[in-house]
Image (cartoon, rainbow, N blue to C red; front, side, top):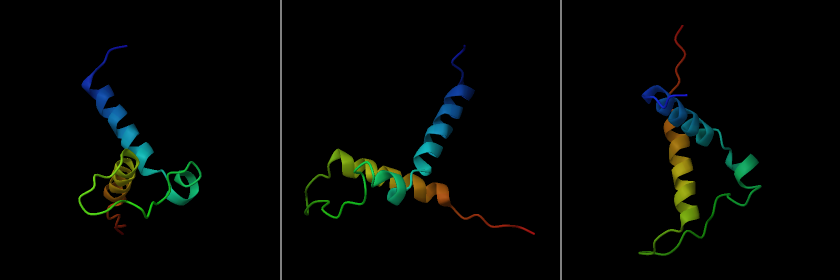
Length: 71
């Protein structure tokens, strides 16, 4: 099986889609990755968990987009 540009793009798209469908209340909270209110104070670096949650929220926001139905 060859490693082509098409297979890399397909894998990236599937990975982004997998992140986009993660639901905070249904899945992420059950595994302990729900919304965290204690992010940190001013000037403190957020932890890896907070950074990953921000990445997941950002991907979900971008993937949501505007879906208009044309008639």
